[in-house]
Length: 448
Image (cartoon, rainbow, N blue to C red; front, side, top):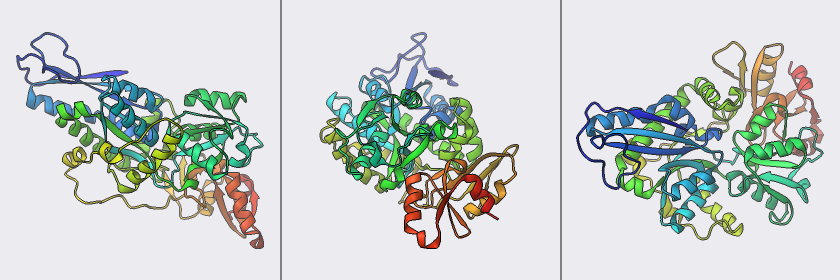
């Protein structure tokens, strides 16, 4: 937890605002407003509303300007959580004003807020993937499990009610397995699940960013299922207590403007942003960049784009079936007005969907280089001092570490796949052309 204090240029000798969000502090003559922000530092596609935003100080800068105009001292209390559930608990208790979390937790946030008469509203998006690639199911490196179908009767760790849990449920259903009976689901925090996977007490782990990438990067897991195979958008967003939004609309707009500035910074300086987030969280910068880089799995834009709202509505029946929510009025929960006021944004000028390209990050270099094909990447990486090499899955486009991917050679053309199941499916469909699975070293050698 970190609190920053912003001293105004002028202090008015007035009593604290009655009913203002936050707490009055110091002498009675001081007017102080504390804004409490709940975020998930290690859920790195929320960084534009959390870790990166905090480190850049943009929200504090916006509030400092407001404090100058109003004669108010604004304090930001940043509270770090592992998942969205405790943020919702704190919001419904009136202790957190603004929070960021994934799509499934957002629906639970909406439901709990209504039930407990502390209504919340979804006001912006942080990171998203239009195919669902932000969530992944992984197994131990030496696991004999080869597909989701092999999970029947196995122990699978996830955080129930999270976006990753939603991916697990849909993936199991896709494989013809009843999510409530076909596997033994372990409801665990991501770090606990990672330990369970390593200890062998869990056969697989379904989690959100950055856990799958981190475990794969460290050689502690391999991908079993790419969430992008669902082809269902997944995202994280910003939710606000309605009472706070009504009492402090300008402060909410300040937050959204600051989020927009952090988003622009991440796009303009993706390597520097990854290094900054890595320093703040202790995550490897190479893992942060996998998700948040120039070709990363996550796209960043605050807009409440219609595909994401439609996906949110499609999530409701999944949570209802799991008895985690009742009916959720998504249209009432989504409030685009604060973002419109904060950014004066007009029509739907969304960032274009650009296919990910292979990317190489060499040691000693401040930037990265992109390539037009996996073959070019492999050629460039051969003999180089590689910090990280990234390559998109040939089917889904999900970026993955080149040395952790499953490689297929067809003729002279190497293709990368995030999972062994994906590679095998491609080989089966292209046997006539001689497609075969090879090691990363062999693929590098054959790249010419």
